[in-house]
Length: 152
Length: 329
Image (cartoon, rainbow over all chains, first blue to last red; front, top):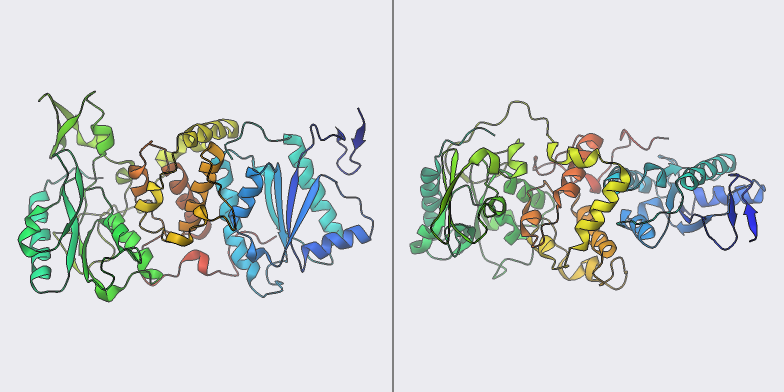
């Protein structure tokens, strides 16, 4: 069976998807998406088990969107936006922060390991930091492996 | 919760007097209180529309129903009616939550506050007999239960209180126009207690996952929880019944059911004081308190916030503080 090694996380998995994790990233258009784009332009190595959803602002994200991603089979969800104080819309991420913090605290009650969800802030100029954040997050999810027998 | 003083009759009389006066003077078109159900084992919501019917109203430790549910916007019938309502401590907190968001009209409301000494868990009491319970009587610290064959059992009131009554910090209403009876002593230490969820919280994630799946497999999606919820009010715009956006499907399986319940939980976050109306409404006994009690615990830790305490407070998710002590990184 054809194997692929993810150079950044060091894990080996088959190409047909067995043993691979699905990780969804929800990134704000103005900071984190640009940061991830910058990381690509700079040819920084990034893990490939990662699917990005671009949103106008983290304030647009409903905690239910994240739960929906989990329900549809995601093994981890990473949310990233502008640093507090740097929001393109001035205050969107302050509202987001409260909702995301509550979600993060509620997830263990639903049977999720803490490593499966993270929210963080990465600016457009922080390509290096983006590489570090996404690599660490996916390493954490890969350690847990795909979710099975789940309530949600 | 302190032992009962058994002052229920005096309070009941006072509720009737206040309701009668309000109806006779035309200050309300109808009064929502508690009344006896189809037998003496149950207390249900009662709508009193004329002064000569106020003697139907009762007050005893079976009056669990949170009557502010009937105040949700668009629910009043007819829409311009002036409504009188009786509230316990926890009910008043949901009323404060509704008032904070201008969801009910204060001018059209007459609120009778009822100091509460704890409500008996009727569901637990009715299970002490295999057949039907026809009468539950609370006398002091004792509960006398009678079944359809006339057999009786005595139970200790303390063992059959609702979970959230045992750790209640706000037995007196937070908002009312008239108080029916004297305020009961409030606990000096008002730090919330969360002992009913501690056991579940301590379980490993895999076990919680399994138990949640088991609990939500039973859900029949009757929507009783959201209909009984006093602070859940989207009605026709509810995302649970919407196909665009389609957050929740109409399939009834554990995942969709839990997703549906999470919609409820996240949408009432900051308004829900865990009055327990959803738990009591659930026909398949899903332990919903594991979700809303947990949510309130986390809100308390995150923002030092308790829902429905202060009329002037802004709902937590409609505002923010740049110095919120999380998500700084």
